[in-house]
Image 1 (cartoon, rainbow, N blue to C red):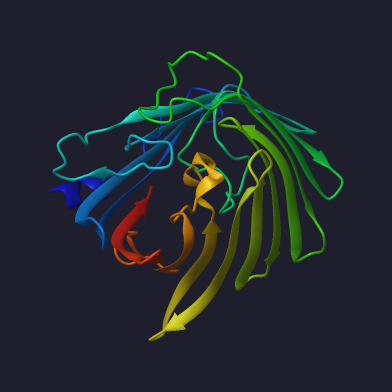
Image 2 (cartoon, one colour):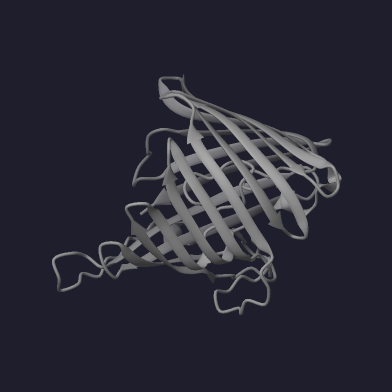
Amino acid sequence: MLLSSLFTLSPQYVYATSETDKWSLKSEANLRFDYNSDRGSRYQYRVRAYPSYQISENVGIHGFVTTGNRFASSHNTINASQSNYLYLRRLFVRQSDQYGKTEFGVIPTYKGRVSSTGLSKDGWIAGLRRVNKVANGQLEFVVGELDRLNQPSVFNSINKLNYYELEYSFDLTADWSAEFSAERLLGGNFLRTELRYEQQEQVYSVEFIYRLDNDNSKVVASWQQNIEIFNTPLELFSVYAHVRQGFGRRAELTEDFLEFGHAVSFELEPQNNLVYDLKWFSRLEFYEGQSRFLLGLKRKF
């Protein structure tokens, strides 16, 4: 019944009386088996929804509703004693103009594509983002509050400004791009850089974060490649990461956090859907003498 209910969800659209559709809702769901050599196995599910209302051509209100109870996690565990979580994590206004965009409210942690060392795409920042187009790239500035990392709610008041970020992303050539950023969050100061090579069939990237106030670092190298097994086109994504223990919670809040120390991960999923727009996915992780295996189904609406 759970599997049926998760994957028979359908997108909903409310049509306005004007010539454009002002309301929209995108959603996705997945169900997965998660085995960890340290804590055993469990079954989990995730539901995400992205409602939006377009006030005008350049101004819209956007939300993000999802399961899960923590900044970097949006899965609920089936049959857990406390696991029926569903939160409105983000609610913000986005205004676009010829120079870029402005976001205000409880905003996403990212401006576009999420890097392995970027903050989790399930997370939130209460504040303001401004992205400006510059020569060959974009300049981004964010100021706000990063707090209350559990039990997210857009209705929490802002108590202090403790998050600052300045990032410059740009294209070196048609295939090479780079990012540089300076961050202040969770009581630490960080410098982050990324070098990325991208073609149609493969993507390579190397990312490095250095914590200025205690001389700790995190490095991530990733590789994405389209392959074919038994005449089935697949996407393979592999990651190597090394994080020093003293790096702090900034490591745990990133998109592809595995564990402190040395870790590797391999993700595999088909390029094409199965039936009813379903896709299977799998992941295998190894870190500091432990292993983890995930296998599941997902669908977007």
